[in-house]
Amino acid sequence: MGKSRLSQYKQEWLLELFIAGSTARIAAELVGVHRNTAAYYFHRIRILIDEHIDKHSWFEGGNRNR
Image 1 (cartoon, rainbow, N blue to C red):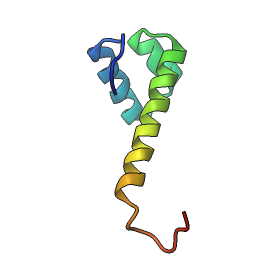
Image 2 (tube, rainbow, N blue to C red):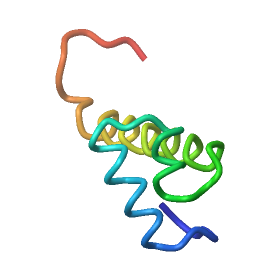
Image 3 (tube, helix red, strand yellow):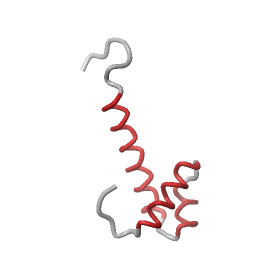
Image 4 (cartoon, one colour):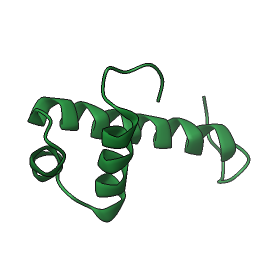
């Protein structure tokens, strides 16, 4: 996700918990980071997923006026 002061290990652990469906608050407790940090990472992951879907699915669907 780019440059971060959070260790690679904690970033990967947060990603695993995101995939597993954990809440940001529970993930923060398990990983040992502030709940706002976990919420920020979960938010950034959702943004990256949305950008990826938008970039790769513009051929699909009906009429999409942009």
